[in-house]
Length: 231
Image (tube, rainbow, N blue to C red; front, side):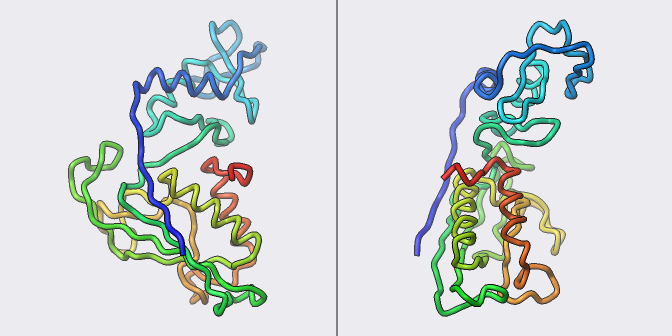
């Protein structure tokens, strides 16, 4: 069995935001019909305008810098048009957590009878909220931990495991917010990357069989900027 833990850095946000935009874009021409979707003004005649490397969408440089500067983490640009992440997005998952995983060759998931199972275990303890959390300085509560999730121990399941490890290292797996089932605030909650938390689906959608799950979670991870070529 193996495990991971995670942590974070601080620098002048305006300078870092400008560097991030410069790293992930290039100067570009703009016609009279080109509009910056951040400010809804024309790009033609602007002093400085850029196109993002991966998707090619165009913006005023200053508009992108302001967007990046107001993120919790100024180390990435998320295109306002198509949501594609440029750079390394990290979240505000509280520190001190652990992700552990082990393989169980003796357990098969419904729909994956030809292989064993990867069991992931997440551990968190109660703590104090940081500046990027809803109520800095107040306690947060790690309820319903440890939490487990399950993947098939095949090639695609292991690919998803590697991507989930990257998500955890970048503090994207959990955040602090409202625990929907209990209606309680200031709890460690999932952050939009779906996990299968039971082996057999009981009607909740949280288990197997679910033939489309691995592709869906790869898509969710890619939305966060975690691509298979990152590994």
